[in-house]
Amino acid sequence: MTISQRELARHALGLPNKKNTSYRNRFCSGPGHPDWENWQNMVAEGYAVRRDGPLWGGDSMFHLTLKGALLAREPKEHLSREDTQMMRELEPAALRREAKP
Image (tube, rainbow, N blue to C red; front, side, top):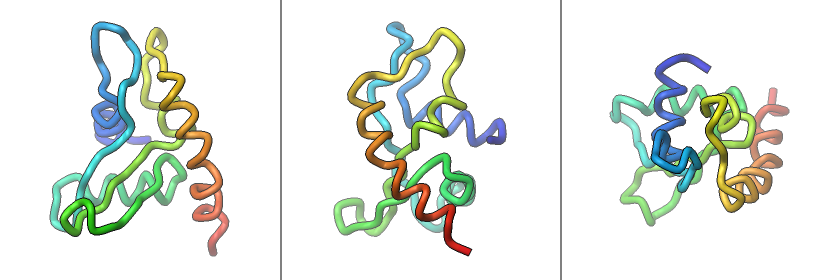
């Protein structure tokens, strides 16, 4: 994970904050957005998954996988229980993407 990808991942998790715990796991971006390529690369590396749909005005919603979130956090920061559960549910989608040739 590059430095700029890590910064984006931390923002998606709502870090840093006073509680040192994530409170969200999302980032909305679309083609032409300055962060689009970084998020596409994080999906390719298995650090995130992408969801498309009409709810985001034609953009995509990116969510970190547990692998990506663990790389993004600082040593004394924690992932919320709810976020961790969601990340575990996203792992199979990320693994399917990694398995594609």
